[in-house]
Image 1 (cartoon, rainbow, N blue to C red):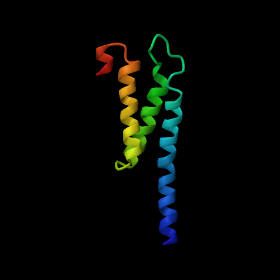
Image 2 (cartoon, rainbow, N blue to C red):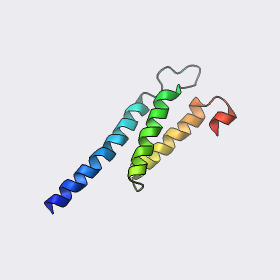
Image 3 (cartoon, rainbow, N blue to C red):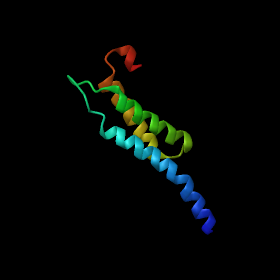
Length: 86
């Protein structure tokens, strides 16, 4: 049983790190914004981190909703044209 718990902890740590990395980028999403438009590097980094977390564990609802939130934010506040929004 103890080995199982250690194995679960070792698997969960990298997943939590990906979500935490995405959260750090998410907090910085407004840096450099101008005229209601955010810059994309922090949002893109958050999306990438959340995508890695979801790819590692498709059942991680925390990573899933944060990924969707970041994608929606990018469409609403980063994309300047309709083509960019798509």
